Amino acid sequence: MAQGTKRSPRTGRKTTRSGKGGRGRGKAAPATVGARLDAVLAWCDALWRRAGAALASRRAFFSAAGLIVLLVVGVGGGYWLAQALVGSPGTRAASVSRPPAAATAPKAPPPVPKYGSIDELPDLPRYSEAEGQPRPVYEERPPAVTPVARRASADATWMRNAIAFQDDRSRPLIVIVIDDMGLDRPRSRRVLDLPAPLTVSFLPYARELQDQARAARGRGHELMLHLPMEPMSSVMDPGPNALLTTLADDAIRRRTAAALDSFGGYVAVNNHMGSRFTTWRPGVETALKLMQARGLAWLDSRTHAQSVGGLVADELGMPHVDRHVFLDDVDSTDNVRQQLAETERVARRQGVAIAIGHPHDATISALAEWLPGLRGKGFVQGPISAAIKRRLRLE
Ligand SMILES: [Zn+2]
Image (cartoon, rainbow, N blue to C red):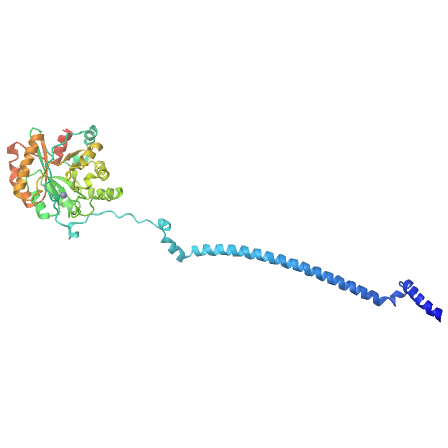
């Protein structure tokens, strides 16, 4: 029993050892299943852990990828949104008000100066070109006749617009120019009734200018344009669209061109007022070059001693003359008579005298009594073109 008992454990152990293969199917099965289960569980656990780790790393991957996608979409979307907002009508309207955007808007043409009639200027003051005091009588300056001026004169506008006038040059020439024509219609008409030939200079803003000019020409007078320019005195008004020293060059160009276009058939241009403007060389050069391009002559009214009008005209090779006497700086018949006597003296002394008057009662009546006696005193009454021709020694 005891052996059996010993054997039994031995056998049992042996059996256990040897019987692993035989009796294992029977007695050892629960331990193997448990181990396998453990192994399976461990494997599952490992698999789970690995899957978890893989999942965790995949989650991290997807999270990172998602973040990148979000970043790209965010940046791209933001850019698109910004573009869409910039292109929206409201934003565009706001940006139009900025200077660079305004440049892309269609540009309105610059306003072209247009001379209105005197009826549109109810507050225009009555002119007095004397500027407060009588101006000196000028002697003829030594002529600086350039070959350019003489050559350019052959078929120039001023020659074609000159009235027919035979000048034998045997007598001193007197030229009477009446400025400021066309505004005061009744007095302008009375000027036209004076013995011809006078030279009548019309303001570019006079009413029915072409008709008035035609009527003047029909009476045997020569035509000029009276171009308004800035005076020294700030209280004097040269009228609309005058040439001012404060204007830019292209504005001077536009105003001059508009005045030159105001009527046709004139020979020369002279300055209305302009005691300030005619001393300003850049402006005078611009204005005179435009006149020269149209074949016109220049009469410097010499409303200021420092006027550069004559000098610039000489430099340009442009036909020009200077005013010698102002007839009515003092508006009285006696004074006009004295100035007419002075005109005679200047003409005798230098062969030519150019006197400027205005459509004033005193001037008109003094001229009416003086003009008919000129020939008897040995003078010849002629138009401004005759004085220019004498200066250029033409014909
Ligand atoms: Zn004037």
